[in-house]
Length: 50
Image 1 (cartoon, helix red, strand yellow):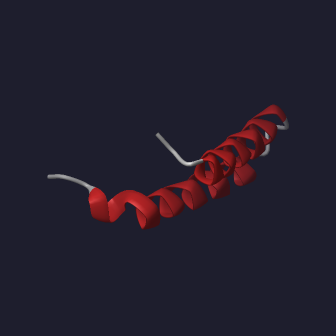
Image 2 (spheres, rainbow, N blue to C red; image 1 turned 60 degrees about the vertical axis):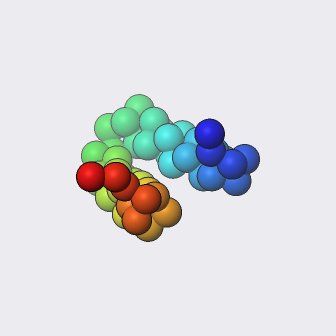
């Protein structure tokens, strides 16, 4: 389970992406997707099993 801080960051990214989709602002959606991917990798990428 994510900490409260991490959960707030995830929720903020999702809210911003949802607003971009609602406004058909695909540049915002793309940028947020990239930001989220980088953010997740930095925090959890080194813990991957494989």
